[in-house]
Length: 354
Image (tube, rainbow, N blue to C red):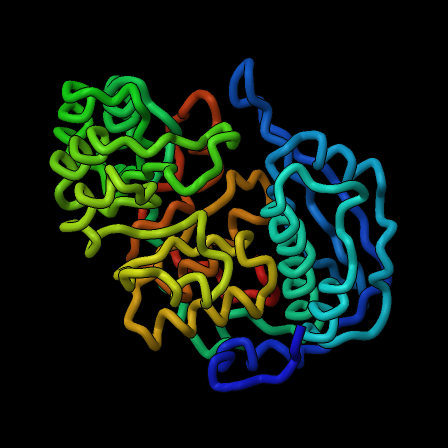
């Protein structure tokens, strides 16, 4: 990893030289039983130094990877005097997995846990907020709720009955026939439809590209952003006239991934954990700003400090966008009353990245 700063890394340059002192680190686990079939596990990285603590969250999805990470414990050589940039370069040389991860993407997820914890700690040790250090103003964050695949409109209507102003990001499934699509569209609450067409078929959430499903969705949700379609010989003719509202998520891990898109997007879903490093994330923001590409934030089903961190980034870079960063309680199996509504209030101007 090069540490040379260029015009392309103008935002990162404001953070790269932050001093960072690490004495030790520890790990803790979080979990949420979402259904009988799925329990979400994440791990929190706690970096300690100079009487301060920085936190980051590993959102790796495979439970065996999470359990192996915790069982291995704090075995990495992280103690020492660093800058944020030199610590990132050090992480680049380490294998953060005790055994090979279940998916190559998970290497970035875990690296982001350490990078975000380091950023949090460095800012706390400096007594500075992220907003002040980047020279950006925080704004109230608009958010959408992403409830997962819905086989009918009834769960969506129930959510809207409890929270009438809720905006949604929905995951299309092969079960979406004309009746379901029309019922969902009639709620007029959908800002983004995720087609999940950019994953390998072995990934549980992957949806096989389907020209008829795409045609149905594009027609019914004429004002929504369409995320991650699978572009094939049969779907490309259906998508061709709608590229101005197609956005990308899963294929984007760095600014170069954005630039190599055949048709330049108008909008990109920025998920920090997909980028792995603070530098790669901020380089992507800089690239989008120069290219006139809009951004909105995405999460990875965080259960702990990772969620307020993606909310903070949204407040600084794309507060008014359809950010998939709703408070974590919206992911609980039973929706309860009294949750924060959109937009989220301004974050307090405190030191750290939380």
